[in-house]
Length: 83
Image (cartoon, rainbow, N blue to C red; front, side, top):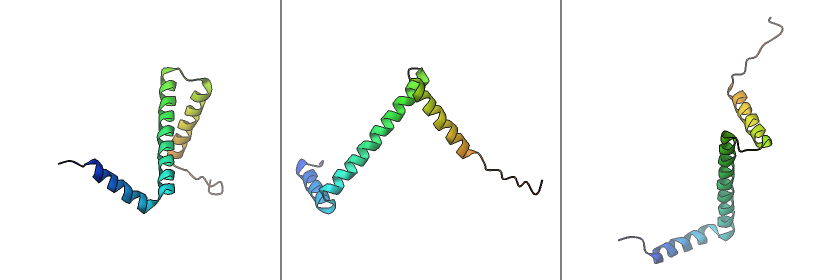
């Protein structure tokens, strides 16, 4: 009562016919790059927390966090003419 191998092959064949092999290959590369980037980022963050990262990596993470904090801060406009 499950999905058989033949049913999976038919679905795969239909997907290849609809999208084409080049587009599917591009999607696979994009997804693989995203997963790899996520793993690298998580590994760098864990190393920074445990103190195993080199100074450059820690500096990069600190700079990214400060940039994120600055983006969250509200922008206050001060007009010199009104003061």
